[in-house]
Every structure is written in C-alpha cells, then in structure tokens.
Length: 188
Image: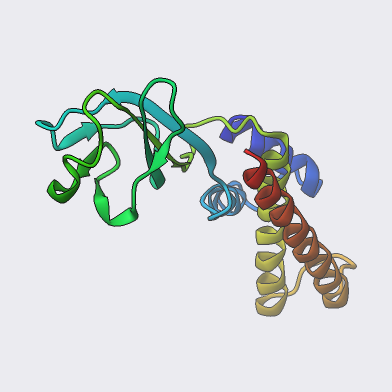
C-alpha cells in the first residue's frame, strides 16, 4: 500500500471523503505520524559483503538500523559478532573495529541483520503493518478531534464521551496490533 492509498483508506475509515471533519492537511499529518511510528519497520538482511582483513569499511544497503552482524564460512554455522566489534556510520557504511580484524576469517560472508524504516515514498506490503498504520492514523485523528471539540464547538451530535470511548478502543487495538507485530518479528 502506498502512502496515497493509505490516505484514501483513512478517508473511508473516517467516513470523511468530503473533508468535513478533518482537513486534508490534518489527515496527512495523522498518516505521517502513523508512518513514522517506531513499530513501522521491516526486518531486512544484507549478505553482500565478503570479509577481508585489509578492509575496514563495508557498504550495506536497505537498512536503517543494525541488530546484529554475523559472519559465515561455507559449511559452518554463522557466528555473531559482539556489538562492540562494529560501528554503523550513517545508514550505508559498516566499520569493523581493528581489534576484530583477525577474529573474522578471510573470505567469510558478512551478514548484517537489521530494520528498514519506510518513508512516505515507500510502499508497505505487510497486511498486519497496513492495518496497524491505519489504526494509528485513525487514533491520531481522534486525538485531534478531541482537541477541536475542546477548543471550539463542533456542529454535530458527537459528544466527548463517545470520542474518548472510541480513542480507548483504538488504543487497545494499537496495543494488540503491536504485540502481533512483535511476535511476527520474533518468528522472522
């Protein structure tokens, strides 16, 4: 699902395709907040580098954060490097500390496991993640609706108790979806 498609789904979810309750900008703000949520990440690996004792820096692609670095030689189980043996510089360079130059066998494949944080130009394809983003965006709009209701009169028959009850329901949904995302990461 693209960011634009997610905004359209949010319109339908809110029943606000005519932008009566929320402006386009308010819905975009809520969607960006949801897209940037710390749980909206994809587990990824990069195993494109071959280790050399003469090379300190390795280019990695498709990762925003590094969880672990492993090395592997043919027909052996991968070994995990201690977290103090490498450093991520920016999001594209992995530096191996000089104290570990000879711990890793020459010619070993380096596998970098981590997360990729999608931007609003990226698609989200995981169905659980899509549902999570939509619920978080929905929750954000209800926070905004509560602020609007407090600051000015809304001309309809929605009362504050209904808004709070719906926010509580969505907060519970977010909690349950986060647990589902964490469990799916553990299985990956």
